[in-house]
Length: 295
Image (spheres, rainbow, N blue to C red):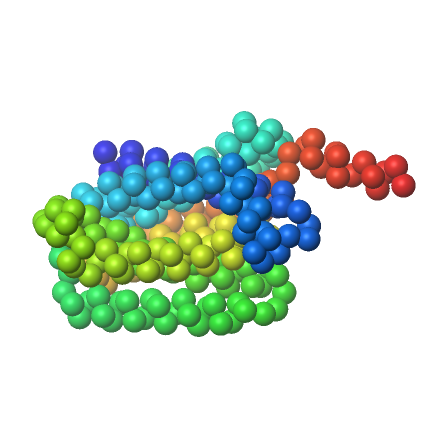
C-alpha cells in the first residue's frame, strides 16, 4: 500500500499545482498584494487546490508511516505525469509526442531505480544529534537559496526559490514520518506534547508559502521540475542522514539504480521543457489573441 498511497499523493499534488496556477494566472492584471489574496480566496478553483493539497498530505503521511523516505519521495515525481494528463483531459491542451515519451521514460526509470537500488531499513526514532545536524544544514541551505533568489531575472528567481522549496519539502517529509510515529505511540492528544508536530506545522507553512511565491514569480517550466526533482534528491540524503536508511550492497545494481535515477531527472527536464508553456487552454489563447489580430 505504500506505493499506492505515494501515487495518490502525487495525484493530489498535481491537482494542487494545476488548479492554483490556473487560478493565479486568471487573476486580474492589477491584482497584487492583498487584492490578489482576496481574489484567490474567492476562487473556487484555488480553494479546490487546497483540498487537493490536504488529500496529498494525508496520503503522503500514510505512505511514510510504514514506508521508507527514499521510496515515497521519489514516487512523488509522478506528480508531473499526473499534471500532464490533467492538462490534456481537463484543460484540453495539446501535448506533443515527445512529452508523452518523456513521461513514459520518467515512470519506467523511476521503477528501475526503486527495484534496482532497493531502498530499505531505517530507524523510526532517529537520534537527537542526527536531527540537529541535518535540520540545521537543511534550513541553512534553504535560507541561502531564498536570499539569492530575492532579486534578478524571473527565471533565475524561480529556479532558486523552487530549489529552496524542494529542500524544505524534503525536510517536511521527515517531520511527517516522525509525527506519524509519534501519533502511533502516544495517540492524538499525546502527539501534541512532543516536538515533531510543531516542527511539521512550521516547516510545512514555510514550504507552502515559498512554493506559492515560486509559482507566482516565474515560469512553471523552470520551477516545476526543480520543485519535483530536488525533493527526492534531498529526501534520499536525509533518509540516510536522519533515519539510517540504506540501499543494496550490490555495486552493479546500485550503479543501475543511480543511472536510472539520472535518466529520470533528464526525462523530467524534457517533459517540462516540451510541455505547454502556460496553463491556458486553447480557447483562452484564442480570446487573448483576438484583440491583437483585430487591431
